[in-house]
Length: 146
Image 1 (cartoon, rainbow, N blue to C red):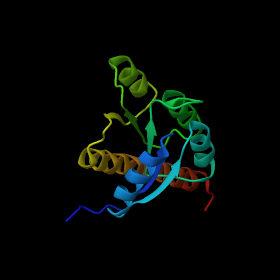
Image 2 (image 1 turned 60 degrees about the horizontal axis):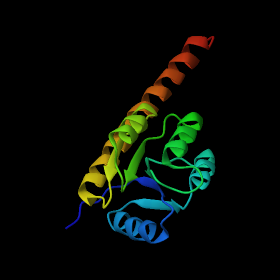
Image 3 (image 1 turned 180 degrees about the horizontal axis):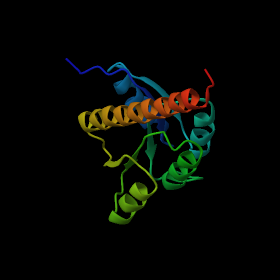
């Protein structure tokens, strides 16, 4: 039996067939998956929605995966992004990590490895959000004149 995980994931890849297949495999494991087929659409999508993990293909027409990563992190630094590539290079891996990627996985993606990375990304995101909420509460209490 497959492991189930409750997570909201955005999948960004210009290959529609790949998106459909991977989203179906993740959804059968309990995840809610949204898909977009361009970096531009991904950047727009994260303006109004929040995700536990975003999976971005490195090589796409228009804005590529690294630029998509950069733009999403500029708008929403709290979002966790996992990069996928069919053509991994050390330079791309280093650049993705410098820009704040959670990890870079090679295609064809090992589903159990991807599930583990999504789990880690969700956990990291929850820790960041809990700290942010705690800091905001402390600030409210500090500034409140009881």
